[in-house]
Image (cartoon, rainbow, N blue to C red; front, side, top):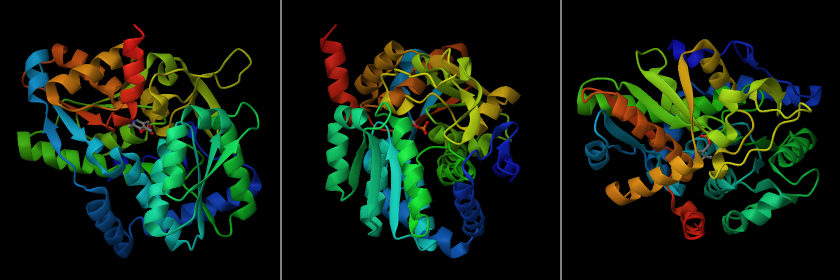
Amino acid sequence: MTSMSREENGYFGEFGGSYVPEALQQVMDVLEEQFYKFKDDRAFNEELQFYLKEYVGRENPLTFAENLTKQIGGAKIYLKREDLNHTGAHKINNAIGQILLAKRLGAKRIIAETGAGQHGVATATAGAMFGLPVTIYMGSVDCERQALNVFRMELLGAKVVPVTKGQGRLKDAVEEALGDLIQNHEDTFYLLGSAVGPHPYPTMVKHFQSIISEESKRQIIEKEGKLPTAVVACTGGGSNAIGAFAHYLDEDVRLIGVEPVEAATMSEGVPAVLHGFKCLTLLDEKGEPRPTYSIAAGLDYPGVGPEHSQLKVSGRAEYVTASGQEALEAFQLLSKIEGIIPALESSHAVAHAIKLAKELSEEDIIIVNLSGRGDKDVEQVYKMLSSK
Ligand SMILES: *Cc1c(COP(=O)(O)O)cnc(C)c1O
């Protein structure tokens, strides 16, 4: 399928690539070779399918949001229920895929970095399941803010290393993790959490997340006998969105990424190298990545995956923003009328779908990728609402 191979030599147009030190490039080269070897390997895929079904709980439903559709009017809104996966979000799809690859490569330990902690939890879960020791690098400031996620990772048997260097944030944790990989690449696998980073990570993460649109395409044809008008997903690094878009790239379907207005990488970013790859990036006056402040921790990233950068420049996908306030309203509305509490990240996508549905007709269909459940956000929303 052509949509699966838009990438050429690790680039999506001018974006992507691998801007890393020579020692790391050798590790990336081996990873690339092995990923392409196993991605079409029958035994590998059978094992992956097994765990996606028995452990993650796939396939998950494509739920018609009938009450929401009635209340809003216009297009029919369907929800792709990544929130129903084990651990409550899409991140586990990728964590399982990469850890199975790590096992094939003979890795003895897994490392990862995490900002809000969600990817750390997914990685620690996969490590526990497959009996591989996991080390998670996390900025010391983030550790304090996300103390409960640190505890969760520890419960799952992972070692969390707080990084005090620099500003004690995600960027510093990425650097520590890369340093570890250079030192220990003989027996260590770096499990990356979004469709970002040097080649082959963006392509690999897309591959493992494409299961989302593989299922939703089959499901919508079963239910409606036709493809949707639009697929809407929130974009942080862009992994749930690229997975939700993948099987529609060559179809006449609108693809819409929704980013927080407070971290509007696509709308305001410029091409720059960030964390070893080129993408649209938010920079400050000094040319440094600009800190972002989304209410949804998972969307708080100054860059975005290279394929999204290219899809934006080529015009194939549209990228819009939703504000924290709009996301908060969508969070409450979906909870109240559908009985589904969405993650604050996913609430950005729901907020846009609500706007879009009104502009479309009853013949139209919108699929919203519900990237995760909102249980993790309930306390934060409680505080935000009670301080008003
Ligand atoms: C991490 C996360 C995101 C953002 O990550 P992407 O790579 O952009 O998908 C979105 N939603 C949820 C629930 C998350 O945990």
